[in-house]
Image (cartoon, rainbow, N blue to C red; front, side, top):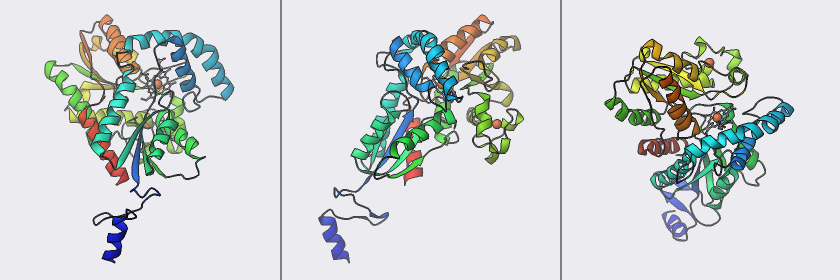
Length: 369
Ligand SMILES: C=CC1=C(C)c2cc3[nH]c(cc4nc(cc5[nH]c(cc1n2)c(C)c5CCC(=O)O)C(CCC(=O)O)=C4C)c(C)c3C=C
Ligand SMILES: [Fe+2]
Ligand SMILES: [Fe+2]
């Protein structure tokens, strides 16, 4: 038996790891690699109005993002958002753009490289964007070209929402459904409870908290329409009130409950007492009710309550982007100072922080090994 293994291994027909057991080989006589697909939202190719329009069109035509009837969605996107919002958004993107481009993109590439180095040659790591480039299809092709036998998809959204994590899973399945051979594919649904995710946010906040004695801390999360919470709720459990105060099996997919839980975990890690922090939701689009409380209203009321020095966190985003740097970092700051506030700081996102890369590495081992 031993001699047979030796011959097969010498001829590279069979690989044997005494601890892990035999690995299945592929038709190129090499052990199969495992694939990791990290996916973020996506960003325009450039901050020009045509590119921003192209991005917004693709993004907002997604039935999971604007979840209304197809005709209403088409009219909203093509007759209102594309002509009127695109030029305004382009100006904001111009503020955000750096020499390396959009932070969402260059931090994505940095993380892909760092994770690939950390995982070593048994893994192939690809970056895909749900909208625009690099597409999820091209990232999957990159993995399949390396003969991966299994793929772990990590949507880079700490909390599950149908509009983000759900949409990534939807797109991956739409692409692979036509393949002849479909490898094992696993999806990470959310990672807000990963200890290293919480630790990275704490590590990003600590230098700011050592310099300033803040009166209050605001956790500002990206909002979603209220109806999307109701649609994802098990047995109508979530009624957008006290039901989100704790996080458990019944409200597992409630985005709002996940956001409150994330804030509690970060506050615990930084020893911020309950009365010193608030949770709010930003980036409302359209006239329908979105989840509350609204961040822009809350921050204007803060100075009158005696909260003059505020530290803001953006824990629904893993990389600096338009919604963090410009909306929370610049626009909210301006509104807060106008309302009588004295100091407004923003905790940087996880970006390419080594603890965040370690967090992803642990997630890969947890789900693929
Ligand atoms: C964190 C997760 C996100 C959720 C949930 C989400 C939902 C959501 N977003 C819109 C509309 C817009 N979002 C925009 C930008 C944007 N959104 C996210 C993340 C989530 N969105 C990110 C990371 C970004 C920034 C991308 C970047 O390039 O920096 C925009 C575009 C910017 C603008 O014109 O203001 C829009 C529009 C809806 C309708 C929605 C609903 C569920
Ligand atoms: Fe968004
Ligand atoms: Fe809820």
